[in-house]
Length: 223
Image (spheres, rainbow, N blue to C red):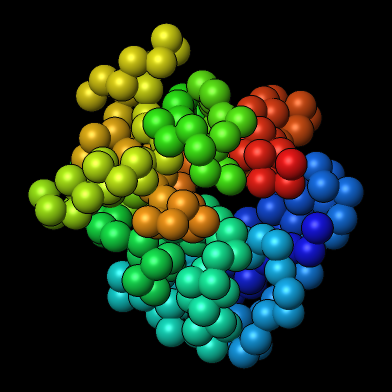
């Protein structure tokens, strides 16, 4: 299992992801600085959370122009699994790998709390083992928006990966922390090999974190 974690100036979850990957897969990922221009053979590329370039301009906009992202896009189009978490989700949208946009939270404030999510797609490499899970969120721009045409395409093509829900799995507006359309917490690309999600599975991958629900996403990929 060969994996890579992209590191941008401002990334702050890159090491968390690396620890989770090594703990679950038994193999340490390669850390790639954003100025690199190519990625060797990879079974998984992770674009981690954080505040790349200090979140100047739109979140993820500057990072999407980093040299390494050209090869991330190329590898994704070749079918390599790519996981973008929080700021990584924003970067994947800005890179054109995922549809929609991530706007300011409906509360207009930064949110840092645990949420419950459930998988809607059950067949992707990321979601085939998923279940109702608790994971933390920490973002200011996690409010997923799409045009009516984009949302219909996403829904019709089974590209909704995760939705915010309550403890019984009901998808209700009251369990939506940021105002995202259709309670969307994560989406897939058309080919289902690219996932962007706002919750942080790497921060809930060991019991010492208080919850290890997040490891099921990594286990789904590695298995």
